[in-house]
Image 1: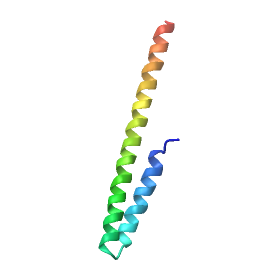
Image 2 (image 1 turned 120 degrees about the vertical axis):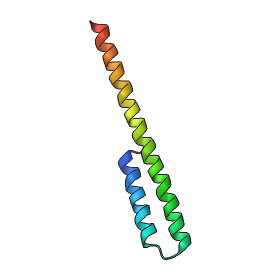
Image 3 (image 1 turned 30 degrees about the vertical axis):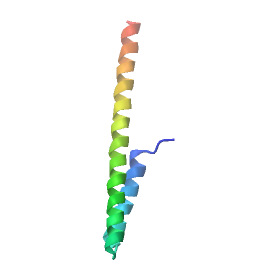
Image 4 (image 1 turned 135 degrees about the vertical axis):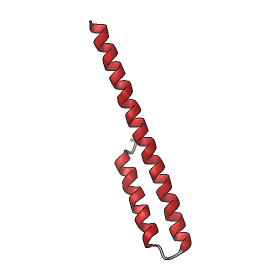
Length: 68
């Protein structure tokens, strides 16, 4: 099962909050790296969802044209 945009953004926001609250530099840096990774995954999930919607719309248009 693939994870969705909302899941990844939730994790990114949690990592950002952890970085904000961190006292130790290495903990803050780790949380910031995690945040960047989660945001990248969120962007990728959004792009995949948009591409799937585009392809489905094109296929629906082709099916419609085939019926005419």
